[in-house]
Length: 399
Image (cartoon, rainbow, N blue to C red; front, side):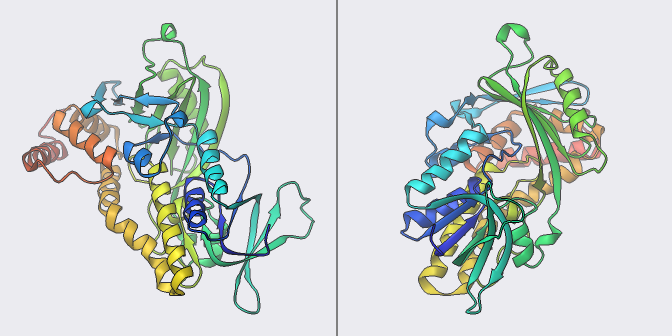
């Protein structure tokens, strides 16, 4: 490990590992600091665009999902087959994140297992990351490393972001919890389909989000999330496993973590720190999708850091958020409104699931999800959906 790097990346999830990869392959000296062994609760879905844009090998995909089932409070289920013969890839975060970190290391990034403790500056103004290497005693002196630019990718409650970027302490988040279980055999129950993601829009599963059963090949992720204090996520997942007929499935492990609700208004300190991934708040409202946006946010943070290192212009750091919001801000806004309205009561959840029966809704939803942009073609379909949506809002269309 060097004493000074062009860039230090704190956090080795999809955002941090991608940022480190971008910088290392450009020939910059990079240190990737990560808490070894930490696995985030995650459904594990990645769309085709993520697979294409970030070179994800098929060997990392533990399942190929070809449909989703939306389950209403009444237990009514609406199946949404993936249009165009495509699929959604599923990954196990333990293997997926490690592959991303190793890819960065193969390009020259130095991997260090440890915990970030404090951001300081030397007398010459250069940023210093103070950290505790894995395995050292709590009373041992911290190690330090200097960096020309720092990327904070250490999660929704990022300590680095809170110490360096104004407003980061105002991050709003939900708590998510999931259990990885042994997937049932086909004969053990017809309710579980290894090629289908089941999404439960039920207030008893989550008062403000949803619950999920996502296949991962030999295993499955069963989870939920909520911002409501006092709501028992573990109790909810226990109920969800019973509802889904998975109460007897063997538990392999469980994880919990905060998940951000919206992007922060500022992603940099105007000098030498830029945020990425959950630290920047890039998890999509309503869907909770984070892997693609973490990868993209990490790429943009890496690009911004490269510009700063090449030009010395600190304004380069702001381009990460500017470009991300240009590409995805409208989608985040629409999904945020959708979550606020449709997830607010079981009556509205019932109507929302009913809307999902519409073939135009299904097609445009999948096209937008798979390609990560709003579908602008087929204006007649949009007009049709708009009037149906208004009908549901006003109660004209019955659930």
